[in-house]
Each structure stands twice: as C-alpha cells, then as structure tokens.
Image (cartoon, rainbow over all chains, first blue to last red; front, side, top):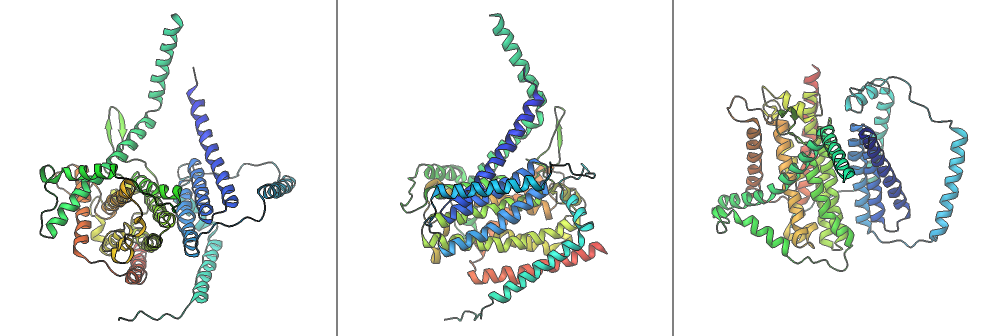
Length: 179
Length: 347
C-alpha cells in the first residue's frame, strides 16, 4: 500500500504549490482587473497568500506581522481612498492581447538578466536555532543586535516622513460651533 | 473472492495505520469543529441574555412568552431569519455583497481558534490541550484576524451602492482602526510584563496575582478599546439610526443581515475571553474551589454582562468626540502606561 510519509510530504507540497499559484494569480488580477475595488481585493488576497506561505515555512511571527501591517493596515487605507474617490471602472486603452505580449517580453528580458547575473541558488550559511525559529524572539535577537543601527535609522526616517505628511496636509481647523 | 478479502484487509490495515499515525491531526480537526460549532451556537444564547438583561435594566420583562423564561425566543428568531426573503437591490455588486457577511463571520470564528480556555489534561494517554491552535504569537494572531474583519464592513459598505451604507462602512472601519491602536498598546504593557506573546504564558504568569491589580489603567484602556473594537454601544456609531439609517448593513436582509450580528456577538465573546486571559487571570481560581474551566467561563459571562450593562446605561457618543477620545485621550494614556511599565520592568 501507500507509504504514509510520502503521502503527507506530497500533500504538504501540494498545499504550498496551490498557495503559491494563488498568490501569482492574485497578483495577475491586480494588474489585469479594471475595477479598482477588485484590484485592491486581489492585492489583499495576494498578501494573505504570502502570509500563508510564511506560515507553511514555520515563520509564524512574520506571517502574523505580514497580515497586520500589509493586509490589515496598508490595504484598508487603499480601500478607503477608493471608497472616497468612487471606484469607477476604467476603460482600458490597451487591448488585452497587446498587454499580455508586452508583459511577456519584459518577463523574458528580466529572466535573461537574472540568469546572467545570479548564479545557481545557494543555501543560507550560518546556524539556525530550531527552538526559536520563526518566533518573535528570533527576529528580535537578530534585529536588535546585528541590525540595530539600520533599524533605528529606518524608524527615524519613518518618523520624519510621518511628521512631514502632517505638515503638508495641515489645514486650518475650526471646531464645530453649537447651533 | 480471495482478492476481495485481501483488499479489504489491506484497506482496514491502512485505515488503522493512518488513524494511529495521525492522532494529532484528528484531535485537531475535532477541536476545530467543536470550537466552531460552540462559538456559533453561543450567539442565540447571547441574544437571549442580552434581551432579558436589557429588559430588567429598563424595568420591563423582556421576551418571556416562548418557552420557559423565553428560551424559545432565539430559536423562533433564527427560524424567522432563515426563511425570510433575501432581497438584493439590482445596482449592488452581487459577489462582494455576498462576500461581506461571510468575511465578518469567518474572521470572528477564526480569531477564537487561538484562545486557550484551560490547562492541558490527559485522556487515553493523549495530551488534550484546551485550545484550537497553540500559536506562539497568539495575541498578535487575534489582532491580525480581527483586523481582517474590518474588510467585511468596508466591502459591505462599498458593494451596497448606497450612500448610507458607504458612510457607515467608512465610519466603522475608521473607528476600528483608531481603537485597534489603543487595544494593541494597552496589551503591549502585559506583553512587556510577561515577556511573551503566547496567551498561555500570560495566564501562567498570573498564577498568584491577576494583572488587573498590577495594571488597572491598562485593563480600563483595553476594555474601553475592546468595546469600541466590537462596535458595541456606546460606540455603535455605524448603526446610528438617526444619521445613517442602519450603516453598512442597511441593504441586507434575512440571514445575511443576521450574519453581521453573529460576527458582532462572536467578537464580543472573543474580546471577553481576551480580557479574561490578559487581566483576570484566565482559568486561575485563586483558592476558590471550582473547576478551572468553569472559573474561565464565569469570568467571560460576567464580562459579557458588563458589555450589555454598558449598552443599556450609556447614550451613544457623537462621531467627532469618538475620534477625539480615541486619538487624544486613550492613545496618550496607553503610551504613558507603556512607558511606565517599561521603565519599571527595566529597573
């Protein structure tokens, strides 16, 4: 009869393959769909598929953060703007076949460039502690020891950007008067 | 007929083998089904509790005609909702219109999966753990999934093609995003105290003293933000009838309408369970002779009653005040509390 180990290895591979394929199809939907609401929803499903892929490779913390930050916080703002501007369908100037052809050409060129510059895939060097792999602890240890300066610089950059946005978007605010 | 018996034997062996090899998988599936069914069947009971308690708070009887103590009322309501005609107006986006309530209920049920409600125990040599999934970053998982629930409301507002729905959807999502910050930041002080993101570790850390005594301000902030996060009164702006008809679910009828309320009630249970785990010591009994799981359930039911009590006590607050309260009062207080907690922890 069947060898169970291979059966489950097979199902795991199938799940990973299905999730990856869904991610690719969703990202295609983002650029090929004409209604902005559906584009945003495709992008959300793409993010969720990426989070699932992280989860399937045991990177639990990364998966959760991916959902909170990208699928949760960033994409809800996209949907807000679409709702405020009114999500009308756009008329596509390019025909479908032409856009496919252009995309295909660029993909081939990109592939050519990649295969010329990047060698065969390599394994990651160094040790990984399997006990804490994928947890918040592992990421924290890495982030706050090796990459502390870069991390702090990035956070300062983001803070400056946030303050700048508030300065640019500032409007004279008169509180509501009681009638 | 020899090959038939041989085949059956092999098949039987295969089934037994695969069952004994995959006990964790089977236990996991059973737990998933039990949790999903239990969480969904809590909803009618909660509706009954809310209507009865609201009746008492307002010095009237509440539903008492159908069955003893009105127990048949939720059943009758459910049957009515199931058989009601489902109306979809012709200008709505059909796919998104159907998707929205499903997203709300799905995320509400999934968020409950990581809530532990008792210490693990042994049955037939199997270590049965009383939670759906042991996620290391459990509390982050709950926040992530409940954040995805906002999409249900936004999609409902967008797809209905109705200005009241759109405004209601935008309002509720803006409110939930604003209060999610306070929710996360007040939970962060507990994370700092325990040094872990796992809900299990948080309960273990409260074995001697519940965190409500150590972090009373964080408890208050978390509970207020939790009430706002579940869109309950006095923060039920999306359903402000005078301004918005009924908010994002204006166009919904029948069971799809009820699914939004199912989501809301399940979120209420999840939030109460979260408050219990974070601040009230989870299933720790503190010397009272009672089963730990009953202690947990009692705390959750008490918090649910507080939710209902709040609804019948406070009037709805105005929208701009709601946002001002969230950003200018709750958020600074959360940051201050976090700062103090962090400083004390380092010292």
